[in-house]
Amino acid sequence: MRLGFVINRFATLSPTYTTTHIAYEAYLRRHVVVLLNTDGFERRSDGSVWGQVRGLAPGRVKTREEFAQALREQGGHLSEKMDLSSLDVVFLRNNPANGDVLNFACCLKHLGVVVLNDPETLVRANSKMYMTSFPEDIQPRTLISKDARAIKDFLRDLDTPAILKPLNGFGGEHILYVRRRQKTNLNAYIEALARVNGGYVVAQEYLPAAKKGDKRILLLDGEIIGAYNRVHASDDIRNNIHSGGRARYAPITDEDRRVCARLKPRVLEDRLYLVGVDKIGDKILEVNVFAPGGINNINLMSGSNLGRRVVEDLETKVLLRKAYRHRDRLFASA
Image (tube, rainbow, N blue to C red; front, side, top):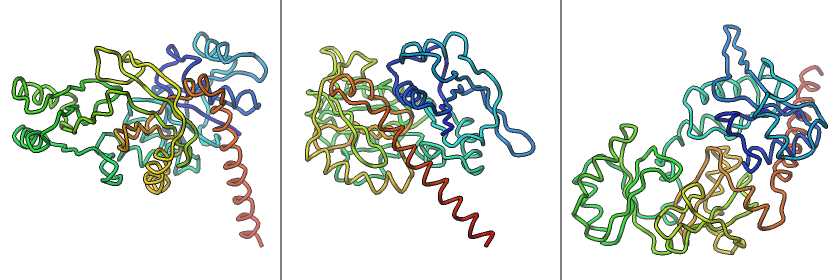
C-alpha cells in the first residue's frame, strides 16, 4: 500500500501518538508511508493535488522512537513533492479541524483516493453539533444556543449540576462546571464561552458518574477494538490526559457493546473509519472523529498492537478495492 498521514506539525511528532503507532506498523510491513503537515498541500490547475511529504526508506530504523525522531529532525530519507492521487489511503490525523485541509481532502476523495475519516462528513462534524445526530437515548440532556435566557431556563429545568462549553472547542478547553441552581457569574460564563471562536454555547447535564472518570472506546469501522478509563485529577473536572487525567485499564463490557451498537449505523453511514467514543455510564459524552487517540495507552495496558490491527484491516480493504477495480476494467473491455 501507499499510505499518507496528514499531521499538524512534524516538530511535535511523538512515538506515543496513535498516528505514529499506525504509520510505524505500516512501515514495518514495508508499505510506502509518507507524512505531510497541514501547510504542505498544493492544488494545481490540472485538478491534481500535490503535497510536500516526508518518509523513510524501508529498514532504516528499528524502533517507533527512531521512526518519530527521524521524521521530526530531518524529514527522513524522503522529502519531496508528491502527486497525492498516487496514494491508496490518506489518513487525516490533524486536530483541530482545518477547513482548507478538508477542502484538499475532498478533492483527493474525488480523485479516487480513500480518505479517512471521510472529509465530507468531517466538514459536517466540525463541532459538537454532530453529537445531536446520534440516538437521543444515549446522550446527556443538551441545549446548544447563544441565548443566555434560553440557557438559564434550560439549566433551571434540568435542576442538576451542568457543564457549559463552547460548541467549537476541543481537547477539554473552556469547560465550566455549573452548580445546581447556580446564579452567581452565570451570565459571565455564558458571555465568555460565546466569545470562543464567535460560536454557540453547549449546556449539558452533568453526569454524576463522571466523578469516576470516563471511558475512551476506540471503534474501527464501527467495531470496538479497545478501551481505557480516563480519571481526572483531584482539582479538575476534565478527564483529558493532557489536562492531568490518568489512564487506567478498562475491560469491554456488555453495556459498552450495547451503546456502541447504537452508534454503529451512523458511523458506517458517515464513513467514519477510526472513531474515539467518550462514554460515562450509559451515555455518550462525545464522539471524536478528528484524529482520535488512545492506541498507546490501550497497547500498554492490554498487551495489544492496535496499530498493526488497523494496518491489517487497511490491507484487506485496499486489496479488495483494487480487485474490484480490476474486475470492472475487465467487464468494461469485454
